[in-house]
Image (cartoon, rainbow, N blue to C red; front, top):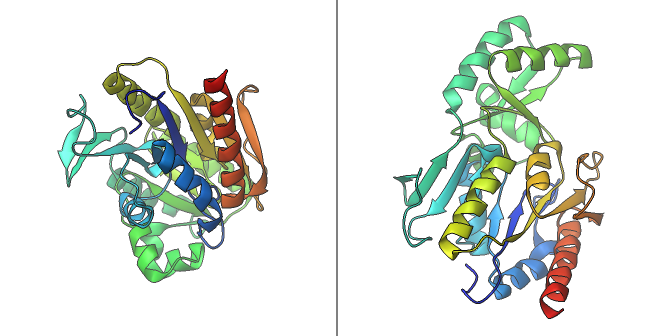
Length: 283
């Protein structure tokens, strides 16, 4: 974390379409600003629809040792010992302190199985399609597809039917207690959680252990499922996408819109945010 003398600054980032390229999943264009955050001691906190295993793989590549938010805010994972003590409301598991904010995946698999009778061949999802189906839907390698299928709290769904039937499908999911978030490729079926609430909770934990109420945080995202996070942070960085329009936000102040796509837009926007942080500290 940042040193006690420095202001508390945090970066919460979506991955696919933001830090990672939408098609290749590369982060090479973002490396200069990733290194800049590391030099400045600013934690980079993934907040993504991805699974814990997928995030662990990326964190190992980047040498990232900070907390992370999985499956669209369903849970927060903090490496054991990261803070001075285990925060309230967390349990220890597999080397992490874990804060669960949503029910487990089995609940949503049972619901989707029931709805398949009503909407036959109109949707697919990771568990039903298996590794080969996930490869086909995502372009991931088989190994990465297996990681993507190791979900704990949510289920990605690919809609195949008409827009009219899609609206009916979403209504049935919501009536059964599911929350449906729209990402760049899939519908995420999960409990009543989102990245914004997970961000807010983790930010409060950081502030508690730093004994400060002041936090300058940046949230980065490109899709509708990032909106809650983009609304919750002090500054929102919206990454342009080659495949869909930028997500619509209620806020108008404190928003950076990238000019470029994916990790190049990520690097550009983070650089602009850091420049603004520097100008504030030198005034």
